[in-house]
Image (tube, rainbow, N blue to C red; front, side, top):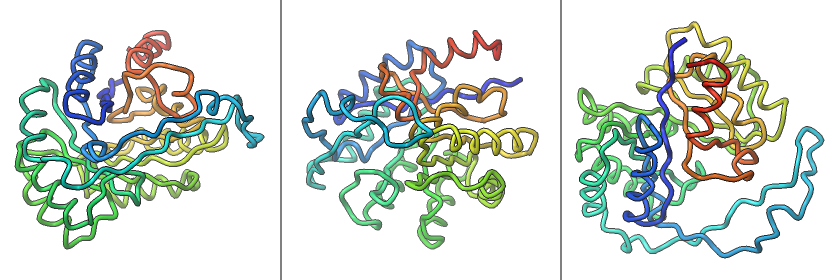
Amino acid sequence: MSRPLVCVTLNGYTVDDILKDAAVATAAGADLVEVRLDMLWAREKESDPAANGAEDDSSADSKGPKYVPPEFVSQPLESVDMETALDSLKQGIDLPVILTCRPDRQGGHYPGDEAQRIEILSSAISSGVSWVDLELDITAEARRPLIEAAKGKTKVIASLHSDERPPSASEIIQDVEDSSDMGDVVKLCYNTSGRADGLRLFEASWDLKDANHNYAIMGSGWGGDWTRIHAPLLGQAMVYATMEKGFHLSRQGRINASDLQTAWKLLEYE
């Protein structure tokens, strides 16, 4: 079975912090990294350390304490010099990079309007980046020039980040098939909360594994990491991981990049 690309989503709210995490990801054997440009405008609120473990999850399909996601404070749009940031990232990261600027409607933190965000994505492509993430819900009018600019030099992740639970496996498969011509890899991420959701993602991936599509399917809660752990078996093109460590990752459907590769060896996927 073929090995998926391991993409580490870098942590940090400043360029310097992102570059430090990139060095760690490189040493851990990542194939490429994702830079969330929208996170440059976010700062995490301080929270009660006991909050993440104090409450039981009310879902009967879940296990363990409820995960309370961090809250963020948006920073002024003018607080980030994007041209300087892109130049520093280009000079400071050796691995191929996916540049992402996630809007609020898909769980991101970019504080500007859509036209301004599209300008940032255009600048990302102009910088010569290896990959750019373009959400599936970008209007055709705005998407067309971005795709044209990317053609031949920058690969495209066609992404959807939904705050809803996964639909049926057949609907997920249809979404991948309908979106396959909108990017080099179709990325679908749903809000998962247990076994039933994880199984829907697994079933869809299993049924897609012999199809001629490049895809990455995952969840953002309990059960969301199943398709990441079994990605080689499921024929996924790319797996998103993190350099973070801790039990909270499984509650978010995420996985540490080193733990992921260890799991693949234990499961004899490599």
